[in-house]
Structures are given as C-alpha cells and as structure tokens.
Image (cartoon, rainbow, N blue to C red; front, side, top):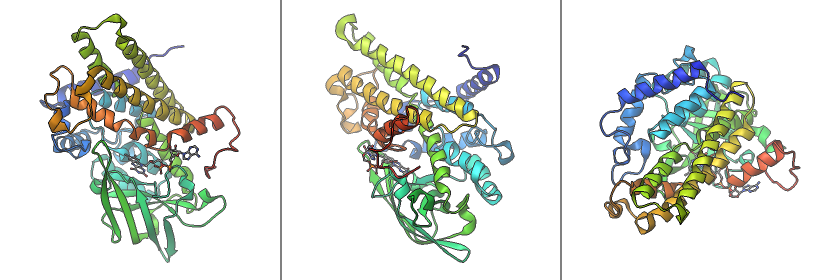
Length: 401
Ligand SMILES: Cc1cc2nc3c(=O)[nH]c(=O)nc-3n(C[C@H](O)[C@H](O)[C@H](O)COP(=O)(O)OP(=O)(O)OC[C@H]3O[C@@H](n4cnc5c(N)ncnc54)[C@H](O)[C@@H]3O)c2cc1C
C-alpha cells in the first residue's frame, strides 16, 4: 500500500509551506503574538484578524469552496492538509464557516444562497457562528425546541441557543430550528441562515474555564425570509449532520505536536533520564498523534469518494480529544508546579525558556472542551459501536436516525 500523497497534493503542501514561510511577519506564530496578555480569544486578537484577512486576500480562506464562487475547489484531503499545516504553526485558519458551513451550503444551498454567502465567505466578509446546541442539550440535536413558524413568505423564529461560539464576531448564524413537531423528531428540523444583526437576535457572553468566549443566543420573534431556508423544510437534519461531520474532521488535533515538541525540548534540556518514564510517555503520545493524522487523512479521503464520514469523523473527534487531554496532563507532570493553571500574568516568568508555560497552561485548560465540541464524547463511541460494529442501539436514547 502506498501511503504517500500524490504529486498534486505534495505540490499543494509545498506551495502552502512556501507561502507561509514568506507570509509570516515577525513574531507571528508565537503564543504571545496571537494571545496578548489579558486576551484569550485566538481569533479576536488584532494580529489574528489581520492574518485571516490576509488568508482571504490570497485565496487561502475559502479554498475548499468551488471555483465558481471564488474558492479553489480543493479536495477534502487538501482542506485537511491545509488545516494540519496551520495547526502545526498555531496559526488561525479562518473559522468554521469555510470548513463546515461553506461546503454544506455549496451542496444544499439555493442559487440565491450560494451567491449571497459563498463568495463573501471566501473574501472574509461573511462569517458564521453555529446555532445548534440548546440549554436542554446538544447531543440529542433532533429534539431541539427553537421554533420557526411560517407566516406568508417569512418564518418567525423564537427560542434560545447555548454555546453559540463566535456569534459576537460573526455576520451570520447557521441556525437549526423546528418547523414541525414530528415523530421521529428529526423530521421536523430545518436549517436557516440568519444575520446576527437581525431584529430580535441578541446574545450574552459566557467564558469557558480556559477564558475563551462563547455565547448564549436569544431569538425573539426573529423574522427571516423563506429564501434563507437551506434545503427543504423539515429535511435539515442531514444537512446539519453533514456539516457536523466536517467540523469533527477539523478537530483532528495536529497542534498536539507543538505540546509534545515543547515537552521533549524541555525534558532533554532539563537532564532527561531514560528511566523516568517521561520519554516513554512522550514517545507513546507522538505515536498516537501520528495515528490521529492518519485517521484524519482517511476521513478526508472517504469524503472525497463522496461517502458520508460519520464514523471516520467521530473517530477523529474521539482520538483528538483524548490526545489533547493526555498531552496536557503529561505537560503538567513534566513542568511541575510551574505548569499549574494560574492567571497568565502570574505565570509570566514562572519558568524560564525553552518551555512555553503559558501555551501549556492554556492548552491544559482548553483540553476538556474537546470532549463536548461538535458532540459529546460518549455519543461518538455509541455512533461507532452502532454504525461500524453493528451493536444494537437499544440502550441509547438519541432521537436521530
Ligand atoms: C467551548 C464550547 C464551545 C461550543 N461551541 C458550540 C457552537 O459554536 N455551536 C453549537 O451549537 N454548540 C457548541 N458547543 C456545544 C457542544 O456541541 C455541546 O456541548 C455538545 O453537543 C454536548 O451537548 P451538551 O453540552 O448539551 O451535553 P449533553 O447533551 O447534555 O450531554 C451531557 C453528557 O451526557 C453524555 N450523553 C448525552 N447523550 C448520551 C447518550 N445518548 N449516550 C451516552 N451518553 C450521552 C454526553 O456525552 C455528555 O458527556 C460548544 C461547547 C463548548 C463546551
């Protein structure tokens, strides 16, 4: 079996690396540059925003979208390789719009939606937050209660969403709402695109333990034209799940390499001893990081064959959340007291270089969120058990098909 990338994909990676080598202004790529003290939101830092604008100008941002809408028509594998290269350098890659919503709109959107959203998305003028999870739960998405009721050529939407990350800096929400009460419940779910500045849309910020902002979103008699319904009314669930699969694929954790390289450098410099167990632990995690990469490539390849990638994407999500937790746990062990999660100001200078203590602390605090991001951990296990192993689903209570 030939595991190497084909010539076109190798050229793709080389071109991207060359561009990144040229494009990185001084200081870009360091933790301090993207996360100035007191500011925790990666893509909210002015440097990050500037960099994403540059990605848009140079055609990297919406590369996965079809050429007719300004994209580059990348394959799923090329999109994945792009994300890997960016994550290896701790660079912002441009948000979920380009990698999850964009491809779903390209496939299911009307011609109006494609021209209204895809080109602006590629140019960085249209950005999406995902409005799926509700206070009553995110796992059992099919039972969502936000209602969209048709009135003439409009829908009137009422409800509440939770963890609507990036809503405060996005132009639009990719919204899941119930258009009918049905049995099974997923048949009554529809998807809408709504502007964040529409009358009746409001949000309040929530901070995660890592200091990252997400939001509670409120929809109070929000009126949206019927042309903003994506696909058919009541058939939105598969549109949503396809976008969620792509989101899971993006979680494939290549940035864990940065943590492991930090730890390796520190451990060697600090007088590594072969029998202290740390080297073994780093070696094991590096092996798992390699496995995560292969699982991601496999998922992307399946997507390129036009197949649904639910099982592969769930595997990406599972392995990546485990890796992040284990790598950051190990970091804490290696760094010792200096690695305790403390406010960044207090952490400054706790431990001299080469170890980037702030980076490790932040990664440690952020790791648990990946258990929940794009769907609960246990549910991915259920999904693989049911769909890949054929285990009966009698003990599960999800209401999706
Ligand atoms: C930092 C952060 C950012 C997020 N950003 C977004 C966003 O931008 N947009 C968005 O829509 N959502 C977002 N989410 C929500 C995320 O998708 C949900 O947290 C996730 O879907 C789980 O939903 P829940 O938190 O309501 O947990 P629940 O669904 O209540 O689940 C709680 C626990 O029960 C387990 N569980 C649930 N059902 C089953 C079952 N059938 N079998 C076995 N175990 C089960 C889960 O695995 C989990 O451990 C974000 C979450 C976080 C933490």
